[in-house]
Amino acid sequence: MYWVSVVTEAAIFAILALGLDMVWGWAGDFDLAFYGYLALGSYMTFVLSIGKPTSPVQYIIGWHLPIVAAMVLAIVVVVALAAIIGCSCRTTPRCSTGTTACTG
Image (cartoon, rainbow, N blue to C red; front, side, top):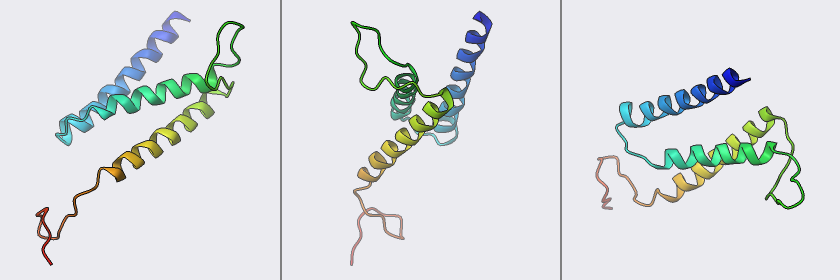
């Protein structure tokens, strides 16, 4: 059981490193929202699959979903949040000339 947890954690960090390589290395974008999306997805997967709490503890949701269903639901929520944040950041119109100031 110990080696399964070690390999699982190594796989999670490998996926994080590959994602950082895509964002920082290939795109050249220093984006700290990447960590926020990873943390939100991990937390949602935990909360959706943890089950019912014991007596002194209370959870926000505390569902007991299978891990695959919890991961899919967490991915859907994180992608929806990223789309909302991405759409709200698009405030400056772009012209076909590549400048940010469009003149009629």
